[in-house]
Length: 318
Image (cartoon, rainbow, N blue to C red):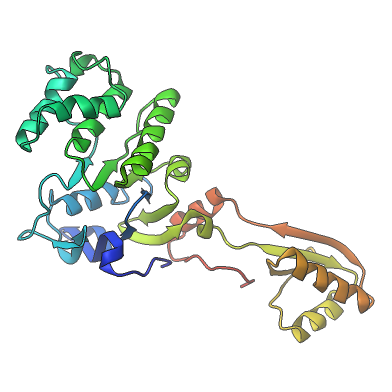
């Protein structure tokens, strides 16, 4: 598994061999998350991958079968909870009283946490519900309900925010609005936000750092840019056998695709590939084609999820 390596002081969330079992079925299986402080972290995977269960474990809504967890530098478990208000969450959709107004729903949370009632009005303004405070929550659009759920999670000004599929079911306009709001919260408030989603394109727009989970296993952790292979260069030359000798003499890894007569080498800089081509030509070779190829992010993600035994390898021809 690719991943971050850092001390607990650098991580907003860290888990070690986290397992949640129901009978013989492991919904979460040996999870080692490392979520750095600040910005948005995407927990990405297909439906049923274990994303919601992972968030519930972190929040103490369900008990792990084994493993350890840390949040905000503190080990958490059945005997050790994070101080109320330091972590906000919206799991499996927003929870509110539909017969109450948006303002009254937020005031209820502020009363529970012992916060001034003025914080309710301020947080509704922050999530773009200014002017809709007195409307009954049942009359909100789906996008407004998502905003209300996020407002209720934000009312304590948490250091860490967990959002489970926050754009699920929204129309295109609402998706953009909620996405922009989440990114602005991370940028302006300095809160660390973990977002789960099964939609790669949504996570790609919000989260530079991801953990990809499938079947309860963490398959990849790191930047989305590094998920894609570094790429490779395909060469077609007049004499592949002579080219192979030159590549070997220069210590360059290669593969030979016999059907097309293509030599495949690792991705190099423009300067390096220019020198290589110059060297091949100086040995009497004709260069027919030089093509740089790289998997799309979608290809890399699908291959990883559909073939979990394969791990991301950077560069080179295997």
